[in-house]
Length: 36
Length: 504
Image 1: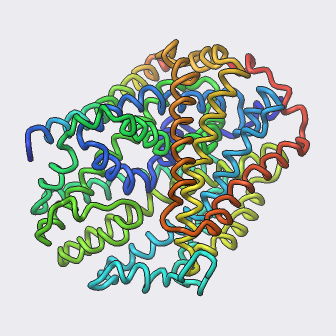
Image 2: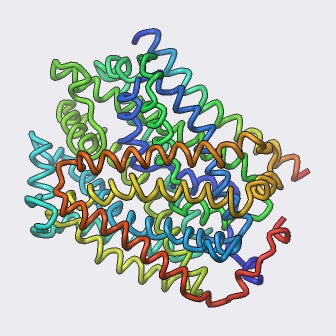
């Protein structure tokens, strides 16, 4: 694969999967805080 | 007011998120998004795509979650509780959903049939001829119905019957449990297709074609409109689904973060699937000695013609990959189908207090009978026309109406405060700007462009008579039914005496 293609693929995956993990972790952290 | 306190609920936040993701992740993510990404500049399309997600798709999702969750009802009830004069705005997406489930069920039925056909690559050496002549047995036009295909009819019976069995129960025992089972299985099948396809010879060529950026296209307005169009269709907004689902969420839910989770999960899914799709297309191009651009396809052509052609080239592996691919289509399609059916039925149970199980029995039986028209030789012609009119005009119009009515009639500040009331992250002026300006303006642009192109060029070689009868007729029926329903009385008129402050 070309470097450009790899970079754009990784950017796309990072934003979507990374953003999803961040949103889920915020949710989990908040839920734990509420349960205490 | 008592209904406000007794409305059934999802058992858990996870259950709701899985159901919302199951609804958003559908056939379009698998067969539409990869082509849109490729067609509109490859990797560089990701820039307008992400801008559109954060400035239109997720804001609209937050708005729909707020409507459903804070006003404790499906789309018509939520609109009527804000202002009874605008109840009809909630009925339009309801009937749009009613029209969609009729043809969506037939596509899922095709996928079920192909799941079994892939066990022995039963489409033979020429998948294209098999699909149109052997499988669909297509007639020569939309007005010539031809004969009914019994295999497709059987698939329809399985889908409508399965929906009745699963969804006529309560939300937590039906839809929530279904999504908790099917979503993890869907992830496994997608991961299998992904890992197997990227290791195919030629896969890299496919991914190069998909992700190599073409920055020059970013100057073209059509690319940005395509991005807003894609995220809008992809997230199942403007069909009443998210309003209905969120009405089953506990009142103190974090709506903003939930919208981000749903939106990003949907994008993560479609981007991941794109990699698998173009890896297979790259392999196919390599085996046939042609450029990848010559084998690129989308929609029905991708799933039922191009992919079977690729599976034929793989020998025994083709059968295995075929089963996994069509299982992915079936699971993604079925969870979306169930959500649209729920969004169609709930307004009637809200307004007329029909018993849920009886409403499902009536709708599933009627749905099966009416959708059998899509099992005829004219099924694909009719499906193509109805789908085009609903997507190009119906859903877009609802998006514009929702944004305008909430902004200029109900009051956007009230909705901002309601969305923020139990949310960790708060929405502010950017969200309000998106709903008041970006969403209606960009969707209006798309609506005008679709209208001009349909009048000027027609669509897909269909005759004007078939477009007017099936497409125009569908839109007229949606509007007429919506007006009639909004004029009928509520069984419990006190349901409309609603104080939103009691919810928070």
